[in-house]
Image 1 (cartoon, each protein chain N blue to C red):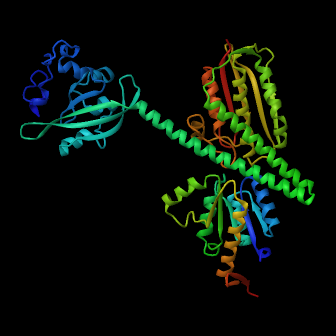
Image 2 (image 1 turned 90 degrees about the vertical axis):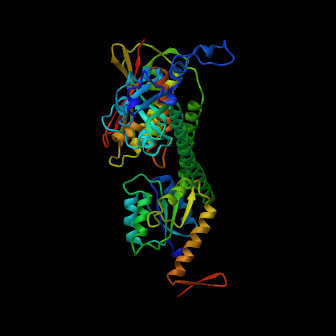
Image 3 (image 1 turned 45 degrees about the vertical axis):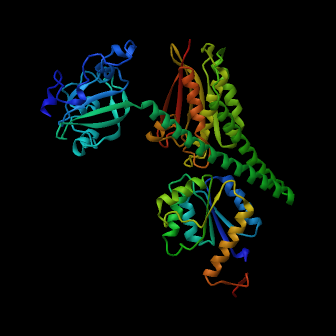
Length: 378
Length: 149
């Protein structure tokens, strides 16, 4: 191991490292681009991180790709450079290779010198002396952050389909059951029963409409169509649309506008969809709050500051704990059990991001929620 | 026989409670409803029903799964048949195997939404008959059920 420890200049004692010189590769087809490169240059250019560690986990060698993303690591401890840890990593593949002289593979999360976190697949392979003792370990890591992100997206997609199918099944139950009640009412000439059934059918038609519109919105790549409109007008229109439903649910749905607000240039169709989803979500939160009989939802358009416009939807419903609040926009998330879908908030988030806006959620369990969306005025 | 049978419907959705109540009453059953797991358990302990129709995805401190556990671990209640209803019966079915805890999630039958009401009716009838035989209140002779006096 010692001869490797100080081997940056003299690598001849280790046959694997003989090629780590800048000597051109001697190949019969002289003249190609590759011929001008030494093996060392090729190793430096490899699009993966290559390093050699000794038994105490000190880095003896690192290629340029490694140095570019993790800084000059030679002489430092591997776990310090990769993870900023003073302690050795648990289940370290390099340690395993030192122990059993075998190749090991693991997935690790590391920190680049920029501070950014990255997921790596790490291979460790032994370097032996002529007697077969492991004197050092080659570690080769490939950045698989993008692959991991795709995995996460696929998992979310799976979850979304499960939740959507749950929501749709609930709505179908409401439609079929409501129709059954209507039929029974008609059969008996009981108009009260038929009306009750018809109300159930109508409620579920409303719900399937919202779900279908959100599926359409989230599945299409739609170009935003910017045009000037009054934020006050859109708030009044959307609030009016929900008035009847709110009344039926015992919710006082109010709007507050500011006449000094100028016309803004956003995609009015998307903004409307966003507000509809926030209002729908607020009304569901009120419905689930059994602590009060009457609830209030307020929709606002106002200045956030001199340069920004804000839309707010405030409810005094169930509110959310920190864990729920942190999850609502991150993944397909629904706390509504047998009612409703998490898709609406994802759609709202897509609208906000598409316009370069920002959303704040002020909430606490039992205290209701306020969704505040901020857009640039100009 | 049906007229003697009392079914408790536990569901947090008022529409679903009303639909099931209408359906079961019109098929000759006595029904009672509870809008959450807590009230459901209280009602079960008080009324000792012949069958429980349980929404397993309720949002309350006591979920459908908690109700199921309470019933199955109470020696006085454990034999009451439970029919679980969910919009995620398939998904939950997979999880039941993973949990491997029979006391915890031991329903007699799962129905996925939208519920096939004819099949539900047949299953209710079957479970109630089994219950009567178990309790010694009825016998089955030549495929026919005879109530004991």
